[in-house]
Picture 1: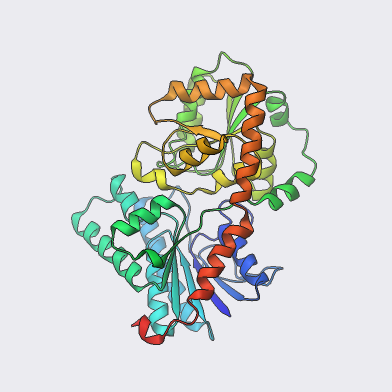
Picture 2: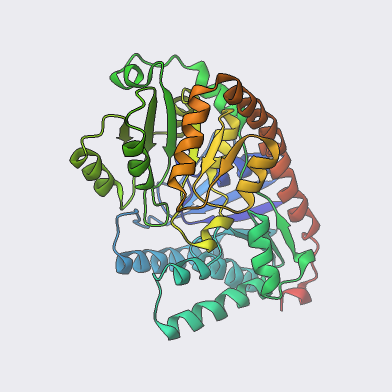
Length: 397
């Protein structure tokens, strides 16, 4: 089977590597996979994944208008590349943005092939509820487009139960939806930890301390400035440190706040390659997930949650939702209402001082990682792919 995989923000060695890991799994199952990517260069990986790039410029610091132009550029170029690709059997398109789903839909009509749409974030609900999109006509257009893509997709993959409920409320048939969360890649963690860490100034800053780490984007929806508030509250405890790793539109503001408050218990590092990030995370004692106080964001399935599990870290959240439930039922961590900074800080300080409680949460995290093992989750998606291979042509009309 030849699978055409479409992902504008495709990455191999840093950031969100889900599509790369899934592609490797599909290749191991005997599929031929061609990836249409927005950035980077066209190449073939050592596993045999063929990557064809549209060379679409994009980064987190772009203005809203420049991002729109980037989405349009990828939309047009990916359709051209998709049309040129011969003998494909199926199309797998992953959001965001929503326009990637439209690419998959158009190509499925032109190629007369089944189309699976992977929903990583429920668009346009997220930007609408965050106030990023306010134009009434644009909102109506995007909502219509969303429902049209759902109707045209042969099958839909979502990354959380919350996302599934969102689609069910929009009248998407339940048998058309597969839940496949992000995954805990324990093998990649083992490979990362085989490399000897350097004796750096950072390692000396963290040595012997209880380090709470936040790797990933520092944008508006992440609300990573929350950690500055926590660091200020806990600066009396010399044993606790906060570490942020990544890029984003809010990064400079966070660094400015740290400098203005003269905080020595929190640091911000630039984005690292995936293996280096995992090596740093593995040396920390707790992972944290943060979002701004918007209910729609609680359905997220961010990579770092599963990276923490793969590293065996207890996790603390500043929001509620399915991840809070999973953590508290397993004992691997805890979630708090966004406004409950005091509770969040007390939990961090509690695990930092109670070694037995930390060890129990550490073991629970390791056990939870097995549930979200990369092969288990990828098999779920592969099952969905193979079950729609024989969709009649008339079903695509």
